[in-house]
Image (cartoon, rainbow, N blue to C red; front, side):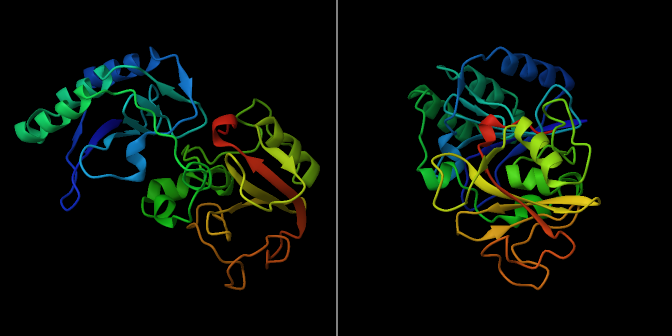
Length: 277
């Protein structure tokens, strides 16, 4: 088990990163658990700016923490199936900075501290296209072998890395029982997917997804990205934006889907409202 903290502040050089001690991991978990107020807002730092952009936390096999966490300006982005958290002070970020030790220079430490003192709780409402519709970013899913092999098409459609090879219905307590449209559909809707008639336009929140089935054998999900093309992640294989003929996917109903002959329908996925596992 390990928990790595990265301070996002540099542009040309790599950002400083360090590993927390077991005692610090326990304190971090306790601090996060004490934050009760929730929000749909995202941290400002995730869209990029010069200077201090927050902290990211990568937890490997640490049951007390989400695998990926981003913290900036009082907003704690849990990057999974839970709502984000929000606080009105800089104590958490100041504490994370204190755990850096010699990894962060005094000059950089002072710059971050001064930024935090200017006021932490300044929520940043991202434009809809940035906040809600994910880009086609295969590196997020493909570069780390653990992420690539432990997340599947359902993870990808929900844009949530859980490292559990998520299954429809498991997050809501009742997994699907048959590889058929109606069965997988019901389990997915229990997880929070919303069935819609079409995937036209840009949703006010979240993204569109599409479910297909290889009758009696398997299911598969596609996701509509912010470039108006569809992409997908076949099992443990890399995420991609082409069908079985190597063509870009304009419509999952008409693309080459191989054995996945049954098109089950379109869904509206709002990550903050879905629970997958």
